[in-house]
Length: 384
Image 1 (cartoon, rainbow, N blue to C red):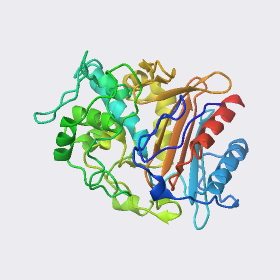
Image 2: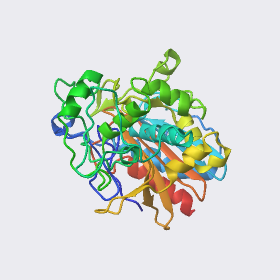
Image 3: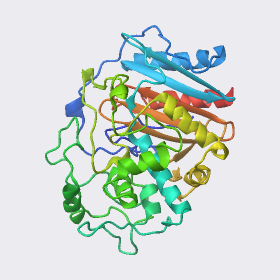
């Protein structure tokens, strides 16, 4: 089975194993402390989108394990054999269902990558196009070449995980909220590259944030809604928490305490402030396993192609998506996400048209805590 780390404040992945990446460079231990694992709790199934005793029996243990690992609530969604199934569980109160709103985290990077693929398909840019920003934004460059849009979408730009000046004055529980375009311009002037562009995998929220700005400067959120979410029917996948969504939103937790949702006006292309639901993510994953039925077929196919291999670890990437190997040798395509209140993971196996999405309303700093449940479930579904 594929090994992978838990999501970090990154909203994404950090390289602790050859398969995972995470990005927060601050010492999170002083924030997190030690969260005690919850005792086993009886499952409280959520709303089922599709029935099926077999799927229910396979999802149920994952929900129980998520609660036992400290999640106040959890919801899983599955696509298998043309059917969809959703179930949720909670420590107390109503269980979440497919319409419950969570912060999505770095899974949102794959939407930004899809927007890039659409721009490539329309002939507006190429993957080899150098990163360009408006005057006043100094783009770091390597000794041999400039950063390209492909480099940003494959975490091979050499940029650091976060802006060098992000943490100055940051709220540790809402670290992107204060950051402005002026701060970004100032930070870029001080930013060295850790590697030559295109030479190594270095997970970067900054890189994906800049990719969003390169595609739609100061209009990233509207661009993602218009170019990706709306065509795919993802009505609840947005950075704007509408009143009807607020009434369905899970409360984020860290170490047992309620924490605020993340806000981000600048680097949102990295997924830092996006919301979604399991129902929306199942629509999104259905488009990934059946791109021929999607209005974004060409863009989705482009994101799933192999675009970069890290020479040090062998990690393979598409645009935004990471590739791993299931126990039967099949390729798993995946991305996780996390904010300081939520952990998410989406994974699919294209040949069998099987997909899994998981959302919990807590952050965990422990490797494999929640992501491994989604990976194990996908492995079981593909192998059964």
